[in-house]
Amino acid sequence: MSEIASRNIHQHLINLLEQHDARFRVVEHEAVGKCEAVSEIRGTALGQGAKALLCKIKGNGVKKHVLAILAADLQADLSRLAQHFGGSKASLASPAEVDALTACVFGAIPPFSFHPDLHLVADPVLFQRFDDIAFNAGLLEKSVIMNTGDYLRIARPELMDFRRE
Image (cartoon, rainbow, N blue to C red; front, side, top):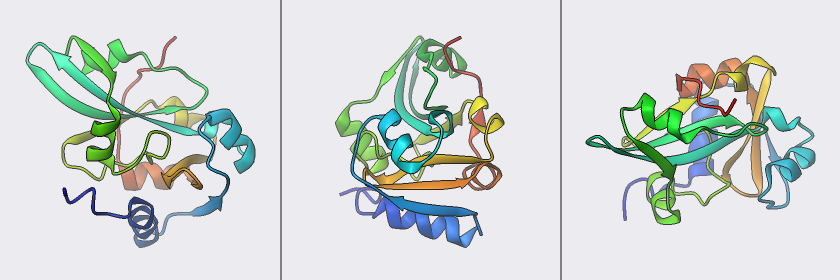
């Protein structure tokens, strides 16, 4: 079993946020898979949701996994992601790859990379519209709502535009 798979990602995330004095709160809710439904339960706008997409980039000698963070009300342009990293195509990773690289199921992945082979990128629009972002915190039934500036300071994603226009 890999080191990441043996972690309790939710507790690891909460510990990280506490260590860095992040302004956040945990919201417990029913395990729902749709961004629209969970934002309603959280009491947040859909655009505050930090959707985490685990992508596989290939081609031109590139083989890389990227955790791409996007506002939940936007769509990703995977070809822009591929081009940014020098690849020719990008696709969503398989459930097995998601498990191996995040120790989470689809929909529960927080917008943080805890794996050395997982590059973290985020579309800047997510941080421009709201003071707080919201995301599932390693479990489908737990979300974190946290200060946008604290997220950027702690996660330190590479900022790049990859939303569909």
